[in-house]
Image (cartoon, rainbow, N blue to C red; front, side):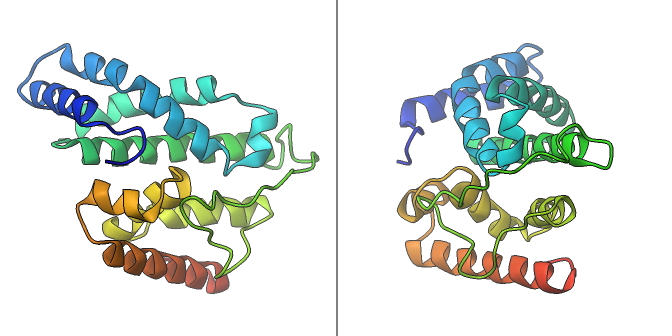
Length: 204
């Protein structure tokens, strides 16, 4: 079982997801409350890939805004599994971070003249730098994370787990219920798609 993902917690989350799908009015709030610690860790890990934002925004603030987004998304999306729930959560957190990047680093943004103490990606999951250097300017950096949203679902899920969540490839294989070879193949496919998108501006 992957780090931070225990059988008991996943069972409890699945039970709340089932209640929410059955129409229980309070189940969605309970689901968000029960998953809050894991969502906090996910937000912190994802924020590490937006180094300039750490000067302006803390994990708790990003998490609260992401929870609002997630709550709205849960009202519109039929989430059936814990795996689907955390994929949806990662998407909402990434969208919140991208909006903050545009706010702080846009033409009128408060941080546009500040130095970015760029850090490499978390090598516990997998570095993207063997294919290309991560973007340094606002337009390319924003396009890079938006390109991840456009990846095929199987590839995007692997990027969520390895790049944003920072878990190992064997742990990702366990979470996804696939072989390590499949994780490696999808990871390479994702890197190639992102490399091509960064090279010529085409959507992956």
